[in-house]
Image (cartoon, rainbow, N blue to C red; front, side, top):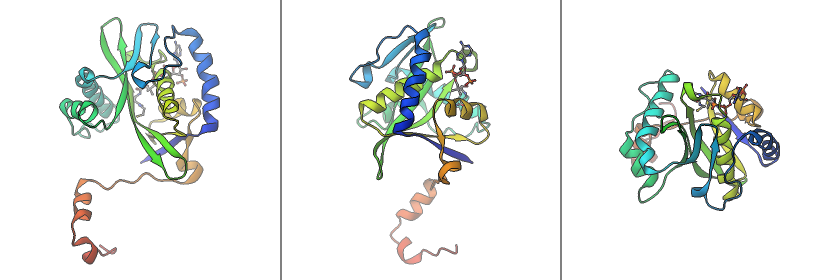
Length: 216
Ligand SMILES: CC(C)(COP(=O)(O)OP(=O)(O)OC[C@H]1O[C@@H](n2cnc3c(N)ncnc32)[C@H](O)[C@@H]1OP(=O)(O)O)[C@@H](O)C(=O)NCCC(=O)NCCS
């Protein structure tokens, strides 16, 4: 089971203050750029920048690492090629940031997000995943991802930054709540639903209208 978390406009004020404190220790490159592609920053030992097509293989490996760490190793069903086409093909279904280690010249973390729409508050950003390799944690990479993703959200004038965290993932939930995130399952009772592919195919059949029986 997962719970949904959301940043509201008022919470972003809190976020802004926290980031101001956090980033006094970083070599900070671009705080007021006007395009997502220019969003980047330098941490001690890492560059945090927009993901590009050439990162897809590394992102794919890290997605598998995250699934292993969540004890769901069989969950990832796509390959690096799908990430390339879906993110950097004719139509872009997601965007992302990566953390590149200076020491190994290697991508060690990613944050993937896309834009959604709220019928109550308009443009929103959904953060799908965030993962940093264990040996590279506690270097403010996650906070940096939140900072840059928040900038991308503000550039598009989003009012919400939404994401889900597994109930068992207490350390991540604690960090996200300290950054101003609210647990919407606890606060408002929202539950996160999914109709999987087979269900979509059933619903897409013309016969569903006449044969549907809620008792099934
Ligand atoms: C959750 C996760 C993304 C955090 O990444 P991270 O890069 O370690 O996070 P940060 O360094 O930005 O901050 C994490 C903590 O380290 C602390 N920290 C950061 N730099 C530090 C430093 N130099 N010295 C001491 N502490 C530091 C932060 O204050 C924060 O503390 P807290 O946990 O007590 O709140 C990472 O642990 C991870 O990838 N986990 C597995 C995947 C996951 O859970 N993803 C989220 C759900 S999809």
